[in-house]
Each structure stands twice: as C-alpha cells, then as structure tokens.
Image (cartoon, rainbow, N blue to C red):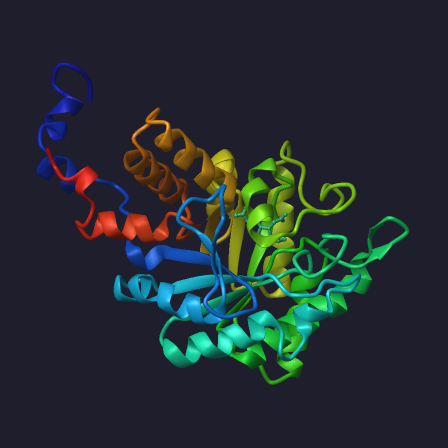
Length: 332
Ligand code: PBG
C-alpha cells in the first residue's frame, strides 16, 4: 500500500471513523486506584505533591470509596502509615495494624470491591528501608519471613490480593508458601516484578512517610539502565508463583512493559507512579499543558505498550472522562 492509492488520513476524518479503527481503548475495569490510610477518625489530610489525594483514616476512606465504586473501578491498592515505626516494622504484620483494620472495614462496606494490599516494610520501619537492616544494608533472607507474615496477616484480614513491592529475592516463593500453609491458597499474588530504583517515587514518599533515613534503594530495586534484567526478574516471579506481574514505573519504562508483554502471558499491570501523576498535575496547574488530555494520552500509551491493568492516581478522574462526565473533554 502506498500513496496515492493509500491515504491514511481517510480514516481520520471524523471522530466516528477514528473510533471505529481505534486499536486500544481504556476501560474503567482495567483501573486500580491507590489509597493511603492512617490511624484515627475523620482524617483527610491533603498530600501536597499529589493534588486530589489524601492520607485518610479508615472511616474517611469508606466515604472516599463511594464514587470509585459507583463508577465501576474494580480494585483499590492500600498503603498504610502506622502510628509507630520500629526497626523490624512490627505494625506491618500486627493483627490490629492499620491495614488489617482498614481491610476488614472496607470489605464489610464494599464486599465486591477487590482490595489489594501493598506488602513492603518501608512504611513501617523507622529507618525507612524495605526490610531489616544488617551491617548497613537490607538483609534479604531475614526480610522474607517478615514479608510472608505480613502477606498472611493481610489475607487473614480479608485482602483479596497481596502485592509485594519490596524487591527482595525469593519473596514471591516465600509469600506463596506461607499463604498456602495458612490455608490461603486462593489468594493471588500481584508481584512488583520489575521495579526500578526510580526518582519518580518522590511524591509517594511524602504520601506514605517512607523515605529511607540513610542511603537509597539501589541495592534492591533495579537499575534504570537495565532491560534484559527485567525479563529475568519477571521470569523469577512467574516461576515462584506470581499471578499478576507488574512493571513500575510506567511511562519512562514503556519499552519494558512491551518486552514483558511479549515474553510472558500472565496478566500484566503497570504502575503509573506518584511522580508521573505529579508532573501532569503541576504542569496543568501552571496551564502549561491541558491536564485531562495529557492524562488520557499517558494512560492510553500504557495500554498500547501492553499493560492489562493500570494502577494510577488518575483512575477516578479518567473514569469520569470515560463516562462522559468531564466538561473539559466534551467533543468540540
Ligand atoms: C513501597 C512502595 C513504593 C511505591 C509503591 N510501593 C515506594 C518505594 O519503593 O520507594 C511507589 C509508588 C508511587 O510512587 O506511586 N516499597
């Protein structure tokens, strides 16, 4: 096919034509919306670098969930901010920890909502690292047991899916084994399989109050320069029993999403992280870009790269747009 017989512009003439030949679409069913919960009552504390997002107490979270649930967002991802932190992150696997209590409340109020919990110690340790520290670095094998305990305790509280984000070697196998031993063999694991040591997590660390107090996470999260290694990392998690695999961050790593998509047939999630969200919000607030259009373009790019599921702080706003409830994008 070539010009002048073939004229690609023929099928771009109207929105109806464009819509007919559109290759990928966004669907509310593919969205996962993250939330940050902290102990207390009636707490709704704005996260400055993430406009529209808050640290919420469990009761406030229930109120915030009304609209996403009504709009058909199928799943949420919960992060906990405990009252007390210590070197081994005890609150992470405490029976009455913030996540355990919140999950129980959410499942009671919204039984059909899929509740995914982040399994990682960094929000719970006083040093802010994702595991226990020995000799100035995170001790991999000593951390596995704590992560497994955390996952089991989340599942016992009612979590539908556990999502380990720590990047310890062998954690998917350790969590799978612990869940199965606890009679929780029906609980899926969504593993942060290829998670990079990214500066795009900046706003999250304000939101979750989890910055490392010394050093950084480069001894356990991946080097941004590596792509073959991502396939090895994902391969390990698949072998260890992951049910859903994830690439994180999303936009600076679309090539990784694409490669993982082509190499594995498990459901693939991409995490459109806090910094990606904050950049769009900040530029839009300055009127430097049209926020809603950039948001939808970013989300469709993640789908086009091959992600089945998108974890995004934009999920609710995008759902409003998809459901025709956003004045700024009405057709001209
Ligand atoms: C916890 C965790 C982080 C994110 C998700 N889980 C932070 C980190 O690894 O430092 C980042 C999410 C985001 O930026 O939106 N380990």
